[in-house]
Image 1 (cartoon, one colour):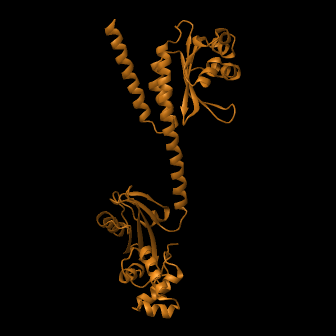
Image 2 (image 1 turned 120 degrees about the vertical axis):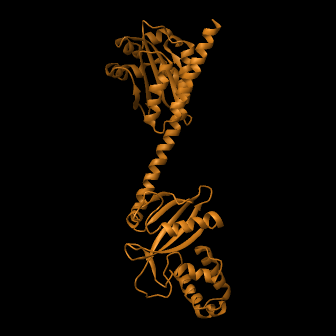
Image 3 (image 1 turned 90 degrees about the vertical axis):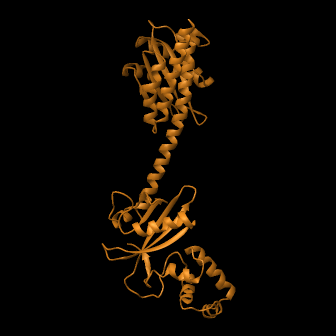
Amino acid sequence: MIEKMQSQTSATIDTRQQYVRALQSALSVDEVTDAFMRAGAPMIPSDAHAAYRLHADADRVGIMGVSAQQRFLDDYEDYGRRDDPVLEFALRELRAIDSSRVPVPEVWESSGAHAALGVAGFVHSLEAPVIVGGAVFGTLNFARAQSRPRFSRRDLVAAGFMGEQLGLAMERALRFEVTGRRVGFLEQALDSLAQPVVVTDLDCRTLFRNRAARKLEAGGADGLGGPLDVPIAEAMEEFRTNGRRVYTGSVHDPGSGEHLITRSLNVSQTQDVAVTLVFKADSERTRTLPAWNVLSRREQEIAELVAQGLSTRQIAEQAFITENTVKQHLKRMFAKVDARNRAELIQRVWAHGGNAVKPLP
């Protein structure tokens, strides 16, 4: 007897572990539901089982998974659900219950749910709530024919366990799906930009390239490929080894003949993620320094004067501002382009040849 109980306990543990593993590998609502139907429902022997989703806006109900015939489902929705003492108890008490344990047996026997089950040849009903984020998300339902015994306390415990684990998995799946939709919206927004944008990790593995970047890059089987490979690799090396947050690079695109300027930003040191924006140099050398959109018009004027080798006092006189204002401008400009001194400032914004910089069309 003891050996039999130990064997049953071991089998129950194994079955539960298989169920939990199936839920843990599920990423979407459909996959979570499939895990219940495939690995969970067999834990309670029944003639029919289902997973329902209860919507918050009134009486809408969704069938996530079901093994019963459509006729029974239609009958239950027509006149069984709105008169189901088992469902009412499960939702009110937030725990599993079966029809043999309804507080007033006569209420169950005269209910619409009992009648709907009877038409399909079922007599016993068990339901358990599924809680997601502190609110009722749905129910797990089991039914047995009259030839089978009523549901046991062991079945109630199993149903409660299945509902609890499914609720946790469903909450994770819903968050995953919301995140996926947000990522999709973000990718669509970035794809609409005319300027190439590349997101990488600090090992130069591409996480995302917008449409403009994909057109620009030749692409390769590994790494970034294309003209952006070298400047992005240089930027990631600076981020990894020197802890820099911003890096400006330059490269010649052999395909188009364009002179490209890259500006890489280490946007999340904890996640090792960097974003690279790409600009191209105007072929018309109409300016000494680029009209780079990271600098304001006034800061570009100051940069022009710095490039001429003027002192702080001389810049202040020509710009009709105080020396302290010049210093404040330079401080902000150093921060914007990650420069430590005037020489680096000019190196960052000069576009490596004096070409005016503008976003790619």
